Structures are given as C-alpha cells and as structure tokens.
Length: 243
Image (cartoon, rainbow, N blue to C red; front, side, top):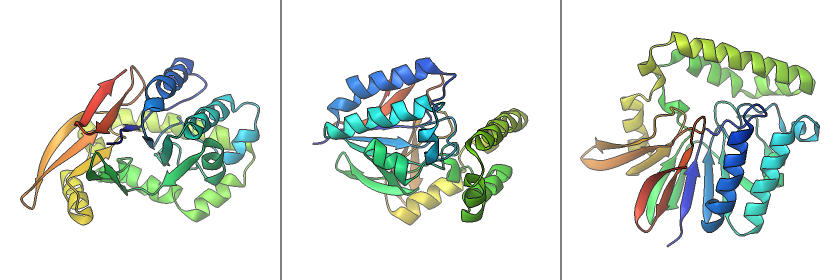
C-alpha cells in the first residue's frame, strides 16, 4: 500500500533559513520514500504572487519550487493547498514545482480510506474578523487589484498585514482561533468521511468525534516554527512524526 506524507504551516521565509534547511532535508530523507506529499497550506510565510519567481530577492521561493520539482521527477506526487498566508500561489508556481493545486477542502484516498483534507482556517468560524478578511482576500477583485501593484509594494503590504495579524492574534482569546466543533461536525457530515486532516491551528493532535453515530477522527498537523513534523498515512494507519 502506498505511503503519503502530509505537512502544513511551514511558514518558509528568508529570515528563517534553518526551517528551509529542515524542509529540504525532509524532502530528501523522508518524502523521497513516499508515494505522495501533501502540503496543506502555508508553505510560505507569505506569497506576493508567482511573478515573484523573477525577483532576485525571492531565493526561498525558487529553491522550494526546484526542490519540489526534483521530488516530483523522482516519482513522488506533490500536492499543494492554499493557506491563509500563501493563497496567491498560482499555476506558474505549481508548474515549476511539478505540483498539483488542490481545492480546499479536497478528498483523497489515503491508507485505503477516504480522508478530507483542509488547511483548517475555514473551521475556525468563531474568529469573525479573520473570516471577514478571508472573504476579502480570496475575492477575484481584491487579488486582481493587489497583483497589479509592483512587487516591492506588494511585499511591503503583506509584511505590514503580517505584523497586524500578529498583534490581532495576541489580543484574541485563544479559543476563538481554534476550530468550531459544529463546523467540524458539519464538514464530516457534508463530505461523508470518517477521517479529516488539517493544519492552521498549530495544535498537533488526534481528536475523536462521533458524528451521526459514526466514529470519526481528526488529525491536526504541527507547524514548523520549532521542530516541525508530519503525518504519515500507510497500511499501518496514520501517525504523527516529529522531526
């Protein structure tokens, strides 16, 4: 049976070179022996548009695309999903990385069982301010206007938004930034699966749920701000692995 690895919330950025090095080592030593790699959002701390690949300052983005392309050429299927930081990843980046961009949510057959894959932010429905911003940032009009700006201006804007986000997070009660139980149950019910995998909350764990008499499980992926890790799913079932 095939082996799939799932990661999220790597938040790769020039100011965090050790995390990039850890990710490249993970691709060489772990992902290279799998059949599929799923990156469920926030591969980058921020992404200002695929044309940034032409910017000499975008060394991290080019290096990541090249490393993923090398993995794909070796026969590993690479899948990417938008996160709340890198939702401007597009067709060009995916083509250069040899990756397929997944919708959020997406269903996948992993370990002989259907799983629902999400970044996880859509489950955090109690964070009303964030959900309003998400609707704005994912709109075609906002993205068209933003991508029409020069690269340097886009980078300044997103760096400013990142600092605002950090301040907002510090001011919010922690519980509203976690998933909403009703939203989780609705996702299980709507998609008819018994397994869910997501990131975003940075609270790695396995959660058991009962939905309409069905036993369900929800796996939360770790972030890579410190050690990092991944979920492996194979014939032995899912397990979280720390790096």
